[in-house]
Image (cartoon, rainbow, N blue to C red):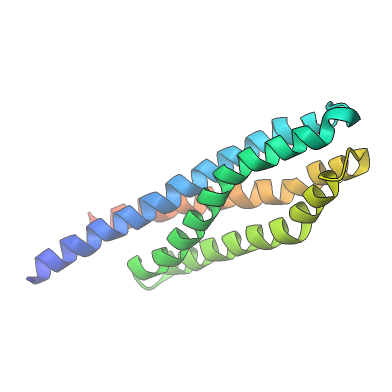
Length: 160
């Protein structure tokens, strides 16, 4: 394979990785915005008698979305470090991995236990805590999407 063919192959692989990183991050930033601004606050409006069934219905459906997007986002973030040149831009790829890691930790340690508590029944204090605590994930995902945009634009500029 010639040098220019290898370079084009690497460039196309890089653009795919960075596009997947951006798309998955932007999708999750949108999902978390809807969850934070609409869905979680609406939990308080569900009657206690219907809450367990509603929460189960919501959890299954959102699980299909985030169960696909979150691992894709993590894999793309890790792969970004392989396609970006050494320097500031690669450092930002490591920052993206850190943001994803922080999201996963907050999800596992805060939101998952809160949803576990809510699966047992309506609890206004847990719902309020879920809404307040979820702002952390909201802002982490917005930051991750912004970093993903910056990485893709920077990579394109480097390649021009």
